[in-house]
Length: 383
Image 1 (cartoon, rainbow, N blue to C red):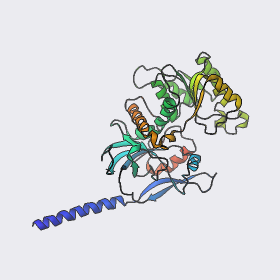
Image 2: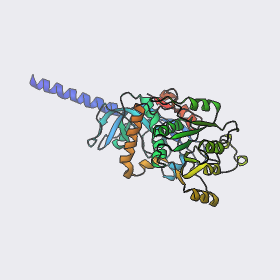
Image 3: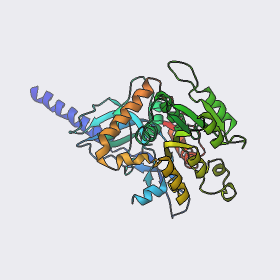
Image 4: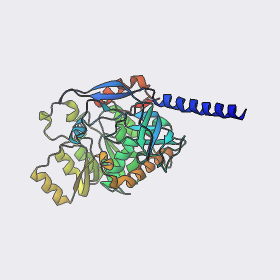
């Protein structure tokens, strides 16, 4: 009898092991992009993905609950020598820990977490199960939804990088945030206001202007987050004049652009580029000791531009939030930012501009819209 019980116990254990092995070998679909040749538009395709490698060391197996979509910088991937036939799509993820490696110290199975897959990751966040190193994850607050966590994490990192580390925003500073009605602009406005800054923003349409004027803090005094909204869509409001008027002629302390015009309006073919401020305008409205944070990676400054910045003692910084994961030296600081972003989301300081959650089978269409910069609200895939 004892021998029979022992045999039954062994059989049961073998069935559990076999069941686990079959589960781990289930092929799952992930979203990838491919570019046949340089200069061509990229195409997005669903690919079957084989089972994950064994979860060892500091790696975590995660069941993805939500994944946010962001524009893919193809040029940066090429410069980082990360070109491949199929590149995974979807990096901002939130989910539940299923399994942890033997060296994992921060997480346990069933923990709810959020994070960003590294730039060189082989994983597509638009797959139900992913493998990720624990140093790219933080705990998700209980009252924060999956879509909110995934939808805010990237823009939160970008806002912190721009306003905290590159420009040191503080109470009383004046901050100009271009295109404040975008998903990123909304989080940047909320962070600047929370730090006690005086926020000015530009709007690219009447709807954007009305949205910015309605922005109020979730807690505390219900005053507008933005003291002045400049509608640049009709051509009547001049950004430089409006900012100088608002600051009493002394200029703005911090400028966070959403792109700049390098040439005159007549030389810019695209209409959306014509709405952007010229680099000379930004330098003109920048105050003494000011900080210009630019997203324009091809910014060119002529000697007169540099001389004007020198006379003002102003700085120009480039916003590239990928730098945090390009070196392990900044890993601790990076995790502190992730935790702070989640805390501010939990307390209502951050209220992301999210579109309605998208089912996984519509991820390809949504990603095409994001890559063409046609999505004003954050697109989040919900599993």
